[in-house]
Image (tube, rainbow, N blue to C red; front, top):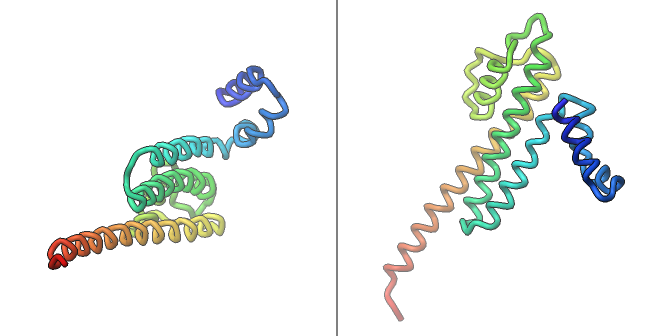
Length: 164
């Protein structure tokens, strides 16, 4: 109901109604399809990306932060989706959002304790996507740390070399 009120209020305030409908498809879908409501959090990610561009931090740190935030967001979405898919399965062991959240973050971090796991085909497809995301996150973090060490070594070598 809150999403619908927000949509109607913003629609009524908009100067061009047609333009508003064209530029806000996510809000319209969130009202029509409740499972897409968490996607409204994409605004937070885009705002965060804008803030990172304005703050003067290194590109590799900025990219790493974006990957971490995106991974956390996708983990949250995966937790919701796995709960929806698995809780109706008679053989499923992910029955509530807490179980789904636990499963999602143990999968992303590649820990995978095995206490919670998907039993449906849809859940397993979601698991594969989350596994790839987790491996990607670890790769980006590892590459950032390695690049930092290389920069430190290069700066140290440049400082110790004889002047010409």
